[in-house]
Image (cartoon, rainbow, N blue to C red; front, side):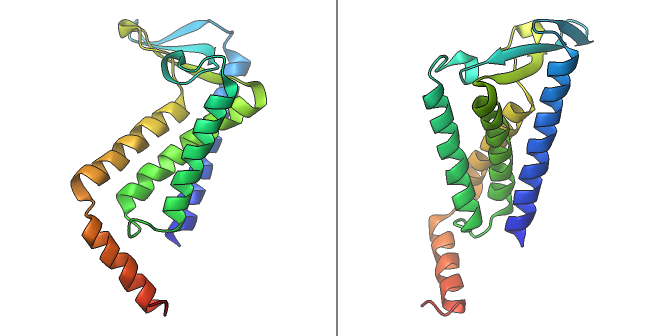
Length: 168
């Protein structure tokens, strides 16, 4: 049941990402800046064919491949409940999947990701909602592994699940 909830949440977050990108594409000219909070936070319309900070720019197959592998890996781990169905891991994984799929859609359609959030005061690279999902999700997954994950505990959970399913 939880898998369906997390998949539905990922679908909703992906839809939000795509809607925000379409609003930007249709209402903000490429390069235009609209101040949101003075010179601190600006909405803009930018595109990026690489990943963070333009890394792998111009090498579409790497960005498509890395993102696809990441999404498939997280989906597999979440759907097979590899970590005892940890809610923290699944929430983080849901965010990573949603952000990854949101950016994959852009890469498949146009070869570029639409970015629009610009923290101008520190000249931080322009990013989007999907990027926020990936970063927050990755952070939650790291918190899970560093502070809550115990390999022995999860091995026992997996063996108990197999016994209760009659696979012992």
